[in-house]
Image 1 (cartoon, helix red, strand yellow):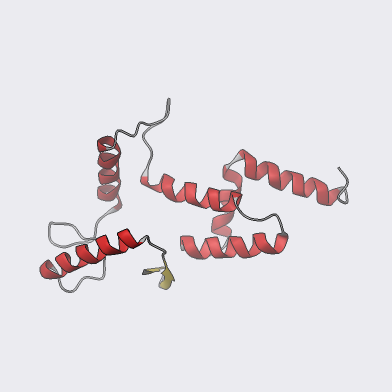
Image 2 (tube, rainbow, N blue to C red):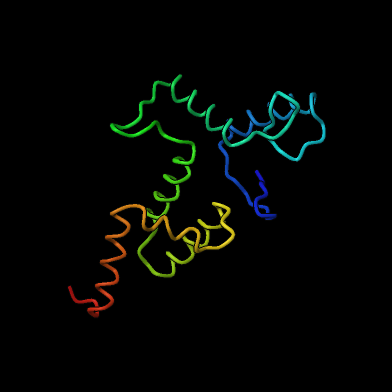
Length: 146
């Protein structure tokens, strides 16, 4: 599926079942609203959904699915899914410098970041990634000697 963000198009891979559900939704929506640039619109007035509405609906889904929050933390947030995906994608990246550069560029594009620098903060978000970076730097500075 193609999506625009920052006036750029990009492809978003979707499972076949999701594509079928979206097609069904769009057919139903076209009967009610014919000209709207947004995929998901509210029932009231056909306006685009705001983040607060989507986040509140996500929390209702979590409640209905009986997904608890972690100790001393709130329930998972919608944005946590995006963050988890980005971190896992970086953790799965091969160790080769060329692979990492291409992987970061692809991830930046996939996440819709206007600049690759916006993706680098994900490297700092987990101890494992920071440990890998520190070990690579130490190895480089010592000439590969452990």
